[in-house]
Each structure stands twice: as structure tokens, then as C-alpha cells.
Length: 272
Image (cartoon, rainbow, N blue to C red; front, side):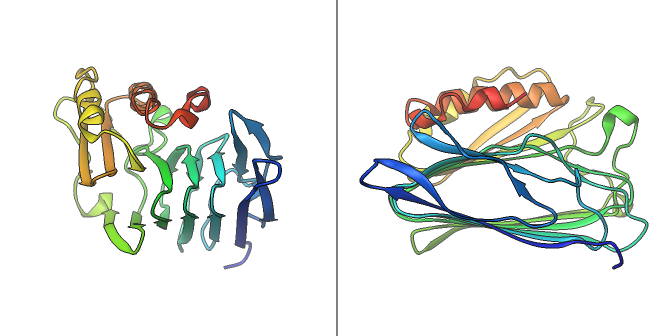
């Protein structure tokens, strides 16, 4: 499609044993992706992923590959929402391949996915986590540009996620949302809007502790649950009536994980 962008972006991190710190070994950006300058924060290397077009347009294809070699410790974040812009026709695709090596640690901060009028996007995420590695991966979904009175006006949103730990496939899920084919499935009676969030957690943590923390979240305007997929692997799912409630619940979930993942400390300031 004329004017569309196809981007292949890659980040590769390693651990310098002589210096005792994580280093950026490879960085390759594209038209849909720029990378900020990495900086050190609390024992890890932090970096921002920036979309210079402020979103995705019809015909765009963006593939992002992130690799953490053994013992690398990284935090990735986005400074702004990922908007799927208005599309009069066509569609766009996003592919994310994220691999964390043994002894590695990755904190992938969520940012909003906001599908706008007429957009049709497929996003596929593959998470490969080695035995002995840790991961906290978040995602947030808005029903549209709610502040502009635009809700459930996109054509189609397909999200796929696959999680492999060691050599074992732990989770594979797909969500297809087509507002024209039926009501928004992420609804709660008496809520005007519904925002969705999820945190995939891999690494040594107390599932019962996390479940209690999740179930102890305020219930007004919020629904939350935790599922343990196997020891040390679980997913927290959140539904909120307002975006601010989802952000507050996300901070609380991350804070409940800090005793098990001390490197999470400090990352909550990015949830604004």
C-alpha cells in the first residue's frame, strides 16, 4: 500500500562479566521504530521504544525482535500510547519476538493499545523464556479514543500471544475483537467503559501471595484475577471501568511482585 512502512527492528543485550553490567550489543531501528539512548537504573539497563509516526497506519508491518543473552537485565518501556490510526481500508500487522536467556531479567512496561475508527490490526507476540530467567510482560487495551467519544469503532483487532518457558509451551491464546459482529466481549454490567490489562509473570515468585494481593485490590470499578499456569509462571488479568483505575491496579500488582523481583522497584514511576 502506498505510503505504508515495513520495519524490521532488533535489540540484543548481553552481560559483560568483567564490568559486571548489562550492555547493548546490537540495535537496529526502522521507519516505525526508534530507540532512545539506554541508561542504567538500579542494576539494569533501561531503554525506551519510540514510534516516530505516533501509531500504525494501514499497510504498515512492524517486526520487533528483542534478545537478552545470559544474565542480561533490561527494562523496556514506551513513552506514549500505541495508536492504530483510522483506516479506510487495508490492515496492519505487528510481530514481537522476545527471548530471555538463562539468568536474564526483562521488565517490559505496558502502554496503551488504542484502536481507532476503521482500523484492522493483527498483533502477534512470542515470548521465549529460558529456565532460570525472569520476565514481567504487560499489556493494556482501550476500547477506542474514549476521551473523543469514539468507542468500539475499529473493524478488527486480533491479538495472539505464545509463551514458552524452557522447552515447554505454557500458553497460547488468541483474542479476536470485531465490534460489527457483536457486542464488545470485555464488558461488566453498569460500566460505561471497560479497559483491559494483563501481566505475564515468569520467575521465582509466590503464586499464592500474588493471588491474595490481586484479590485484595479495591473491587469498585475493577475486576482482577490471577491464574497460575505452572510453578513460577502465571498471568494477572484486569478489567477496569476507567483507565486510571487500571493504572493504579497495575502499580499495585507490580509492587506486590517487588519482594520476589527487586529489579521491578523504580519502574512504577513510568506508569503515568
